[in-house]
Image 1 (cartoon, one colour):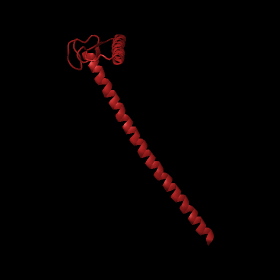
Image 2 (cartoon, helix red, strand yellow):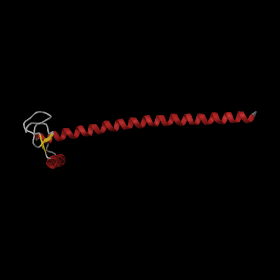
Image 3 (tube, one colour):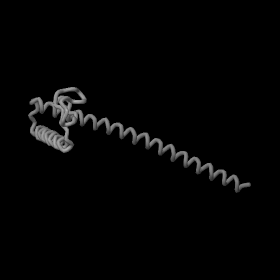
Image 4 (tube, helix red, strand yellow):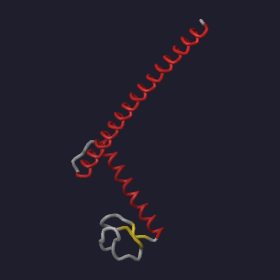
Length: 118
């Protein structure tokens, strides 16, 4: 019965190869997940760093030219976004609450979210 022994050995070898490849894929996936986690952590640090620099700019304590120009761009973007939101609310027939920024019906006297006077 050498045929069955050879077949058994071949199946065993294939099973070992598949098992090794599966373990390799699992390990690579774990490592890729760790890389992704660290990349996300690094991006959060970039975000926090950017917020700190921008807050220094807004408070008037940041004077470096490169940072100031980026902060000015952010301020301009914020202004444009607020103008566009106002246009959107006008098109919808809404008012924006000055206290919380919630969109309310144009006929409302008070904000339906926070109760502030409109």
